[in-house]
Length: 266
Image 1 (tube, one colour):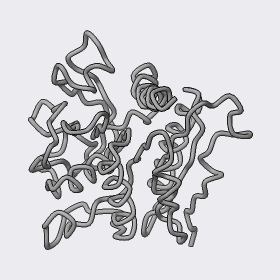
Image 2: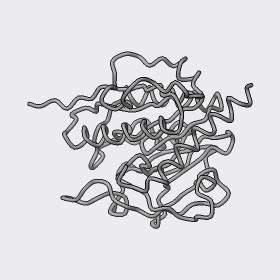
Image 3: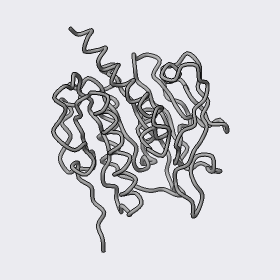
């Protein structure tokens, strides 16, 4: 039986770390889900590698943390980074947001990963760190803020491919003006994004506001109103089947925020 296992070497940019990097971004991801299939292996490898490559190209040094590794994360080193990115992965355990019972279409539940990433997000909120949370990360941001999730969207055809179709497809999301996400994409009130989720934000957490919605009203982005730059997006900017300029823009935004903070510290 083939085991589909990833290591950091499979996803980090080739070559030595950037010598000219002026900020460090801690990137928190999942490389190996329970019962990982060839499909999830391929998606995690591609999406993680694209995210890391895009951050590297923006001029940042990467500290990559795989929360599925047996070793406990170095939380102090994560807190010392100039900014944090939490990537997507498997479903969040239902008990984390008060759901008990079977979840249709559930996959990749890993309670240890939930615990570790919730700690990272909670400490980022406490520290007013710069944080970009993507897909699962955005859902965990909502849970960390006291919100809940929709365990399984029905219907979900706007948000992921159907049986026999690719999981990820194009989806249009509507941006709320005056938000941090809208500022990343000036003069635009909507984006075509890559989407592949069957769970989503339900009750919005404390001190979060909605910054993007799908056409069916499903929450596609949030941000903390009581913090400087904590943003969650439900879509996958790191899917390289999507618009390259939009991908670069959102990762450049978190790197630029890291630079601004480092400059302010002198």
